[in-house]
Image (cartoon, rainbow, N blue to C red):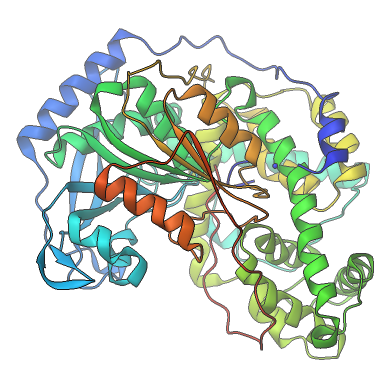
Length: 538
């Protein structure tokens, strides 16, 4: 699944019996001196060239105050004089304004580089965020910098299939698939892996997390920054941690929001198993919230009753898709988003309620495939697949996948098999696999880093934040209690936001661990028009 990882008690107990050492390593060599030298060469060139910022490409649809440029990086850092690719970068310069004191000129602290996760998400729209109240203090002190990582269009985009195939619907998504359905999905996974290899060729192997970390150092140099100030969300925390491990002396300040578990044994097969288990718990949170508001939605006053209504809708959509486009798979994808973000809960509950009352329009608006977004989604899926498949060994025997996920689906049926189909191309991947880097820093090697985590985040579960905290010496972990939204920086929690401001603006951190009370649950509301909803996955 695109985003990272996870847990209810039953799922956690079950997972102790699952395989922990995926097969399928090709014995690809670990990164060595050649790549390190290549980064030094590329960074020196980037520092000399800088970035020429001007108007952004029209297709990015960015306002005029956001400026864009490019930075060249080697496709293969072991051969820095070989093929170069260009990463597109966006920037809004520091305003020097204090939102609380119009007479005070705020000194610039440098560039704040942001990555929203994925793999496969673009940060090019990030600099626009400086106009929002919660971000204005940072926008006064920092140039806000976003970029499209390698493979994410327009930065040497990767593709694995015709985007038109993604915009099709309706389609099925059985919770307990038949053997015939499994064979069909295996064939599709093989075709997808083959398409990635055919469309990208020998370059495919170079789209990976280690190169994303190396690219980040070249970007730092191109921006003229001696040390990097970085905020990464979700998957962005993983290659941010790789960066801290590879380039500890280049770190100024780093915020890791919703941290991926960086343990090499978790990258990425086991991480996805744990993620599926965790989404079952978050799915239960959503249903319990709906049950609290039975008077509004009429979907039952217990989580089990809400589930029965959801299953009734799934069954009806399998027979007669809503609007001719929304079947069980489209329903599943729409409601999976409720596991990421609790501000999506009201619209989904209302759509379910309206459908059962004879009005399918809200559900169609939420869940129908969006043709206009197909090319972007195809590119994002391709980058996600390439990075995760390249990063680590995966089981190459379908029997391993089938065994582990059949067991898991007994206690966590909501997302287990859909997560399998998302990642199954990695079983048939045609590029060499790497061995994950052992992420860790010793005492004093890097300045203290700030890690943010919500206790019930399913996409990047809390155990991952604890592991990140253990491995990055001197880091500080801020926990949002009794909350599960994925990505908590500058959300509705003033306590969390205060810690970020204090760190990025003043270099102040709390004790080794700190806690913030969870933000309030959403209030039931009237239906909303569909907006573009993209979850970054690690």
